[in-house]
Image (cartoon, rainbow, N blue to C red; front, side, top):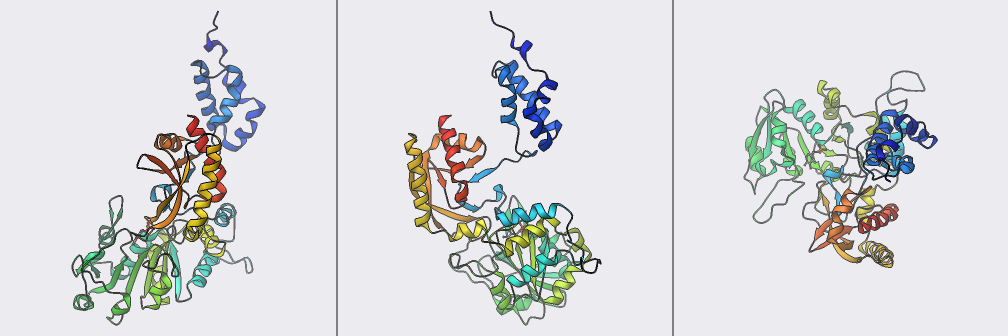
Length: 433
Ligand SMILES: *Cc1c(COP(=O)(O)O)cnc(C)c1O
């Protein structure tokens, strides 16, 4: 005789009262735990879960924190993957987020008890990292920094001179010219797609010009019969030269010789440098403005600046990124291929012991949407049967690799070595189906 499983489905209140769920209730809240309970009750009803195993099944489906976000191990070989949230934060930055979540002296001088300058620690850290900057300011993201500069310097119908070859789309349909025009600035294009000269700029600059904007093409390269004009040649035209360098390298990086950096760009004469915080800088989403003290002051005091203000959590994470140990981004860039290959071989050997078809192979990683287009970084990957890619992607944590020539490659450049055991477990689970 079979019993109707519906009769034996544990009651919601009984499950919620189980001592094993006390901790998740405190951590996640009643609504979230109840969602898990209801889901498991359905599986009991369907005969998929034994009524006696209901509580442990609930524990299994409950998330670590009450958000839908899924942790992903980035084995794509794209160091700064836009769809995975760009730069992974350093443990120091993560700790700073937790500190800043409570009440802090973010805008208070504890010595005097009076109001203090918001985020002064973060600003001081940035100024110290780029001594060539007369002053610095931080806003919500790179696009916000551009909007602030364009509004303050060329808004209200003034002109902004910009090379035709630098009118770029940064992804997902966002075109910087549209963003710039939304400020009321008029774009005065100079040069052609492939070439522009100092004379082109000089001819275009007039009484209505509010700024010259140079945008670094951070997601493509032009090759062949090309010429562009650096900030050094544009000084002396009587208008501020603003350089959007995109990636946020503060100083030159030996592995990315073509990538512009803030210190060098300022030293060569730019009045203002704009960049992102969550690309090669390796920090949280932020937009950095560095340069001439009067200009930065003007932007900081512009009414729009308040609407682009950066959050207290971000300020803390950003400061810790600058003052703390190497970021995951910096470590990924600096890890040699021999080390990566040795890691891949160790992981492959451990999987082979379990009978998994795994080997270590050479791989080519990239910086990604964060900069250095066209640059290949020598890397190493675990090579697995292509069939496991989907199970890896839908597992918890999810593992995102790339499928190439019938194999699923898990590139190790952007995977924190501390996550190697999690990676192995995920592969074992995916292979087991
Ligand atoms: C990424 C990028 C931006 C936009 O910066 P966000 O921080 O994503 O807003 C602007 N300009 C360039 C050249 C970029 O590479």
